[in-house]
Amino acid sequence: MTACGPADIRQTAAAAALAVGGVRSLQPTLASRLAAAASPAAAQGAADRFTSPMSGIRVIRDPDGSGWRVEVRCVLAEGHRAVDVARAVHDRTRASLIPLVTAHSTADALAVTVTITRITRTPA
Image 1 (cartoon, rainbow, N blue to C red):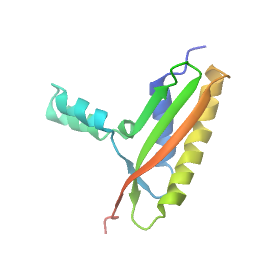
Image 2: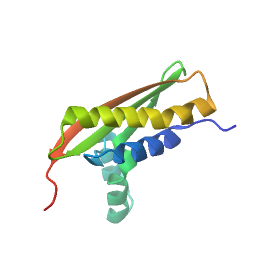
Image 3: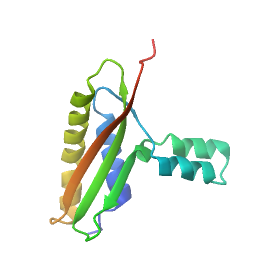
Image 4: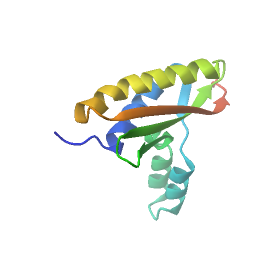
């Protein structure tokens, strides 16, 4: 059985978060933005990485190797309550990650944190 890696967790978490009503997109982290800006790749390639939904997910392995910390940064669509959407993103993301994590290592702990970074208007 292969180990569960950060890329698997990031992809699953991004899909789960984007499936929640009221989530407009995922906000890239500062590290993702800096990496895209410093990349010698063509401008279009850097833009594609910047807008990747997975760049709004940060996955950290606990130092002792006992579990995972997943941070989800969401952009909220106008007209939705931030607390309700954040709760729904947390619950859906955690529920989608538990089978992935436990399939590879039953002792792993999983902590999910959701941050609403901004609220945007829905285009007319």
